Length: 560
View 1 (spheres, one colour):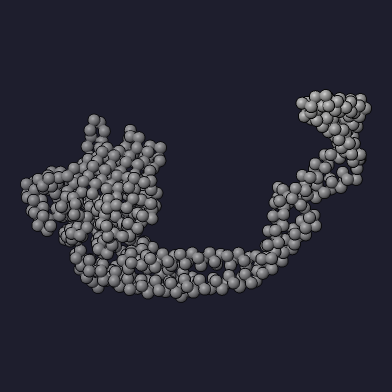
View 2: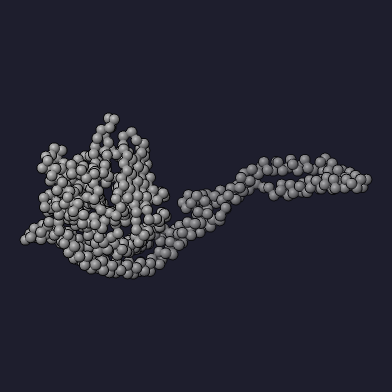
């Protein structure tokens, strides 16, 4: 149940804090057209995940904020499950808050945790139901009529399973189509893959081979410099240097013999001398290995060209080229077994298709039962809404029993037919219904839906559109009847409905310090009489109208 609502800087509302009576009942909001009653619906819609806009922020403010406190029963297990799965704190109180900044940024919080619009929509669907002009128009759409039917029949779990299996079937069919396309191009593709495999295997590249060849090529191109540097270095290590090093070794031997304490130093110096001699031998071997080899240079260049051609075609490096070889072999092997894959996939598609068809048929059977129940329930409600012998019929479009009927929602297309008067044939709802008739049909549906689910709060936005006279009285009785077991919030222009409210709020638009603001104030009983008189006769009303309003309010109070 909605307990509190706070609104700041939303459209014409500067600051608003509403507390709702505990235990449900009927709260009515009245006021002149344009006073700002629809802003209340907009505020609650924002909490339910509706798209917001920075244009809704009150001029001069940096942000707008809407916050609501709901109390929920502990036995509302489905709502508790949704909260837990969403990672939100599970409590008997739920706080939903929405902030929109002037830059267009929007933030939603549920019980203090950041939430997505989708999460807010799912959670709010378990908390409240809004019936406004948009819902009236949706009632005329075939797809929405199917939604209502599935809701009344409690068929959404079956419908969700149907949608999931339908998607699996569609994806399997898409895979089969791709396989058949590959079958059509099989010969050409096999030829192409064999060419790739042959080209790479003939070249037989090895990882890192190109880098090693580049290093060898650079060495061969520099052989003249390498020969010169090696000869010069070897010449320096020979001759006087070698003689001097031999003399150093001899001196170290003598020094160690005279001073045993310098033995370690003498050994290290002698080792350096021996090491220099060894490096000389190694340098001579290196020099002897150097040779001019134009043929080897040519061979390396040709090999690098081959490897570069492979990299240009199959990858930036030889590792990628080898990966391409493995992929080509795998695809070729798969193509060689393509007929077998197609047969297996076809069997899967057929199996899934049979399953989806069976699910669709089962869902259709349940919908037929739900349609009869919906007709009976709606027609019963309509009788109490001053529709004498009117009737609603739920009709199913003919099907040919093939896969062409199948959709994610099943195989059914439904349309609501309506006959407002006895003796008239029922016709499609979208073609014949008037505004007042549509309002009462919507009210009848909302009453049926409210009784079967755990939503405690029902909000009606001008459900009385196009209704007057005895029909208005009937609508007022029906809304009050619904408010016995639910919290009902009703924006209305009908005094008959306003008189039955257990709580009455008036929305006014006024100018304060040169700024227009909308205010919402609870009305004491005396002010309620005046408000009812205004609704009956306009801003100027007589004492007779006032007495009529008093009588209307007494009847409304007696009906509570």
